[in-house]
Length: 107
Image 1 (spheres, rainbow, N blue to C red):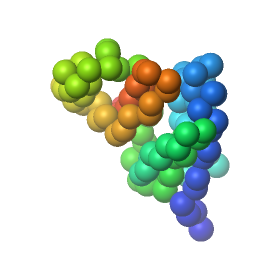
Image 2 (image 1 turned 60 degrees about the vertical axis):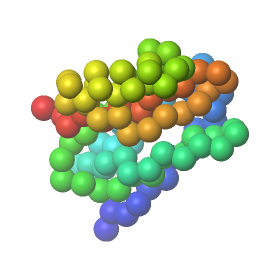
Image 3 (image 1 turned 90 degrees about the horizontal axis):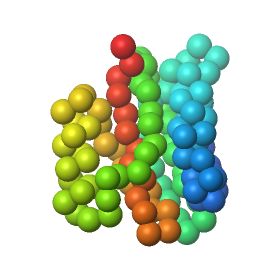
């Protein structure tokens, strides 16, 4: 029986290649014929931890920098993604920049 899974990444991995972490997250969410959905994003000083659980739909995840660090930039980015049917699930702080974690139902 499939259960909750935890994925852990060192914050430095996100600094080096956030696209590779997104690819890894997507691979982890579609493994062994079971699809998973991201249900939690947690960050401490050294790590980012994702929790995923089995689901019936197929989701695709992207991790990318927000347009800027200001409140206005972040809100504009959230609205922009939402208008494209992309949900903003959370934010990860990397040094003085912010990465968004985005989810879209796969077509």
